Image (cartoon, rainbow, N blue to C red; front, side):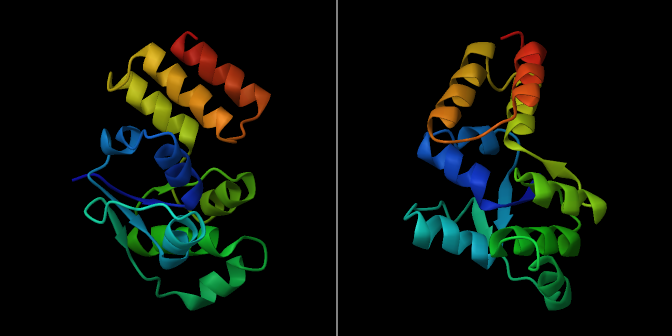
Length: 156
């Protein structure tokens, strides 16, 4: 059983473009902290598959308070939960990625998930590009250097 923690950005992006398969191809369960659940379900009004997304409370309030000085609540709880459960974390915001990495958390981003799907032959090149461009249309932001590396890697 492949488990992971996720921040809200990738979850919202994939659900908005109807491509939850990008996560389900690789993971059997995604833990999300309460603040991420609130962002996705209450703020974005997106219905989550409760069999696949499991809400988990954080314990380390001290680390949360420390992180909350520079990150939003969902990112803070995601990083804390990943530390507590010793699982990898899906997070895309640059500052959050850097902090999570510095705390020893293994991180994935949206692009990394696409590459993993492509390399494991879960998505074709065309499908991978389709997901990428649909995500960009939905407002997913990616730096030009990373976009070029991604396109080069999958031969786009």
